[in-house]
Image (cartoon, rainbow, N blue to C red):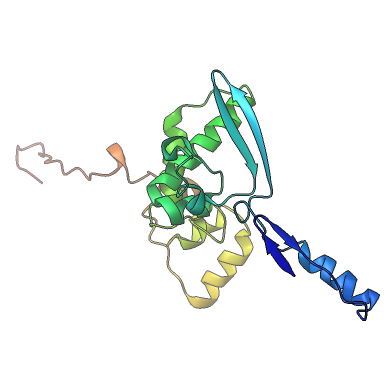
Length: 202
């Protein structure tokens, strides 16, 4: 094997078998010769007066080191990579941007604050957690709140077996129990002084 600038020249010996040639061909497919690792394809596109390069694959850490790349206008849709390279707040903003783009493409109009609330919930712990029974929902302290999302019987049976108690401190479980929600006007308790017919306080 000889290396010449951006090329690799490989020549087999006459004694090599055909099977060896096939194995070499397959291993060469994974060999990095030039460019940026993990970027398999690039497509230059003109948008307004600027040229933008779209890529198949992502390697944000190495791309941002390149002098030719404007880091302020470089974006990736790999949520976990953005979180590891730029931080959890950048990942939060990426969630907002991606969800908003999908909603706009569908012709829908949703207040941005709903999307922001979702992204805040997913990233509030400092790591990215999905809104699934394995992510945020699975960490809820309330049995009824966990049961309201997915696999209700599993959560209720597990709580019964372990003797888990639901204090009904949140919105979901109080709605399920058809009682006042402990927020807003439902939060404070009122004490009223009542007088009897003789004018004495009870």
